[in-house]
Length: 234
Image (cartoon, rainbow, N blue to C red):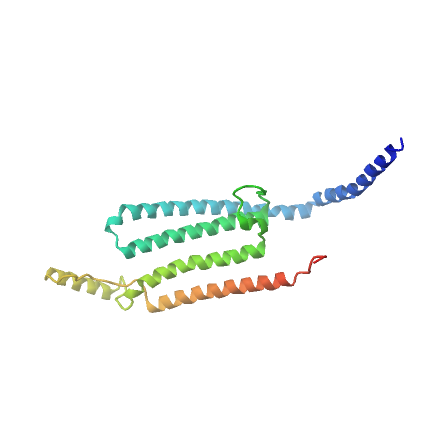
C-alpha cells in the first residue's frame, strides 16, 4: 500500500504537467472564424504551384525536342552550333531546377509541411529552408540562368560589326555573296550578326546587376541573422 502512494503521486504530477499543455494546444488548434479564414487563405497558392508543375512539363517537352534536334542533325552541325544547342539545354535544366526550388520550398514555407523527414530523397536544403534562405537561393539560381544567354552572346560576339540580320544591308551582302559564288569565288558566304554592341553591353550590365542584387540580398540576410538574440546557455 505504501508503494502505491508514490506511484499515484508520480502519475498525478505527470498528469498535472501535461494537462495545461494539452489545454493550450487545443486552444491553439481552435481558431476563431476570422483568423481561421485568413490562415486558410494560404491554400489559394496551391493552384499557383500546380501551374508551375505544368510549366515544368512544358520545359521537359522543350528539352526533349532540342535534344532530338541535336542528335538527328549532329552530322550537319558545326561545333559552334552544337555548343549553342547544348547551352540551351543547360539553360532549360537550370530553369527546371529553379522551378523545383520554388515549388518545393515555396509550398513548404508558405502553404503546408511536406513531412519529408527521414525520406531518402529529401533535399538537403529543405531541412533549414525559410523565406530568407529561399530568397538567397533563388537569387543565385537567377544568376546562373542569366549567365547562359550571356555566354551565348559572347560566343556570337565575333560577328559584331557585320550587318544586322534582317536589315537591307544584310540582304545586300547576301546578294553580293550569291553573285560572287556564281562567278566561281570560293568561300563567298554571306554572314550577318544577330547582336549589336549596345545589346551586348546592356546584357552584360543586367547580369552584373543580378550579381549585385544577390550579394545585397545575402549581405542583408547575414546582417539580420547576426542580430538574432543568442540562445540561453550559448
